[in-house]
Image (tube, rainbow, N blue to C red; front, top):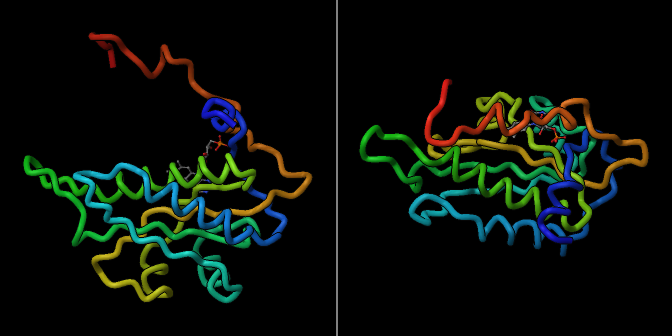
Length: 173
Ligand SMILES: Cc1cc2nc3c(=O)[nH]c(=O)nc-3n(C[C@H](O)[C@H](O)[C@H](O)COP(=O)(O)O)c2cc1C
């Protein structure tokens, strides 16, 4: 599958069959995240592989996981993130999101469905997963095989034309 095919095949799966994802595929997905670029190559990501039923249930208290058998809790370690000297901007959210993107696309390439989830209460996650203060939960990537009836959601088909999102040299934003 070339990259264009991966882009075209991917959509947010919100109906997982619950079938376990093979360990080799999980490994390959994690390896893809390892190759992601991060600010100053600091690699501040910390990824918790959540697959035990009681741990998925704990995560499911604050995030809809759509019956996924596996979720990657992608965190940023603020003791390792790069801070921009001009304004102190912390690269953690960006770094964790690039890592998440790489893993999501690799999952697609392997035929594994995914949905990126930010709608969770970070305080609940921190408490339930015993995260120290410097480990910030950024994204959850729920993974699994979709059910036969799973379909892309309505948002999937509504991409804005480039004319609404791109300007050349001058803009009227
Ligand atoms: C930063 C980010 C946060 C998201 N959070 C959620 C979420 O909490 N729950 C959810 O069901 N989908 C979530 N999504 C998935 C988007 O809703 C989805 O990617 C978008 O509607 C386009 O649909 P598609 O992925 O099927 O192409 C998130 C995606 C991104 C990139």
